Image (cartoon, rainbow, N blue to C red; front, side, top):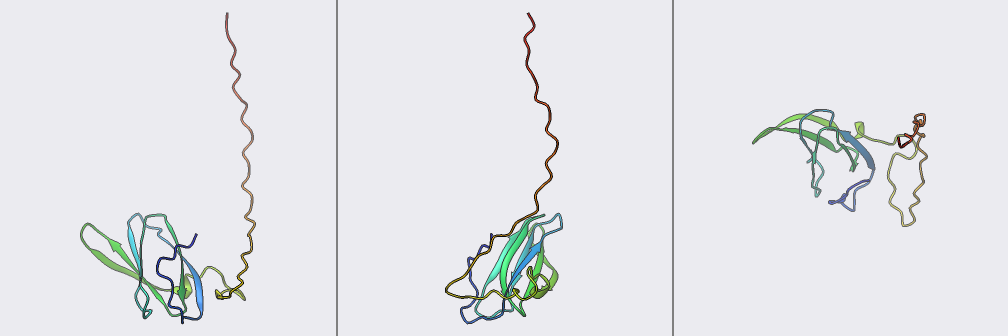
Length: 122
């Protein structure tokens, strides 16, 4: 689910849906600071997936946190983090938005384990 606490500025165009995964064992701070009139900063825990909206041209800074400091460890253009590519890559803001359901592949079911049978010994 996308958590939007600070929505993009209303006049922004070319919105894209992005995803960042913290593949490290350290807590990170994800921050976008090059979009005027918009503040975006989130804590991303190890293994966590962060899904967010951004504009083309935005860059995500990844700060790795230590005890009482943080180090800028990476800067990633948000268009490289874009989830959906192709004709539906832009998020169009319309009054009538349609959400399509996505069918995910089914997990393979493991063979049923035999149930334990309780018997009483007299």
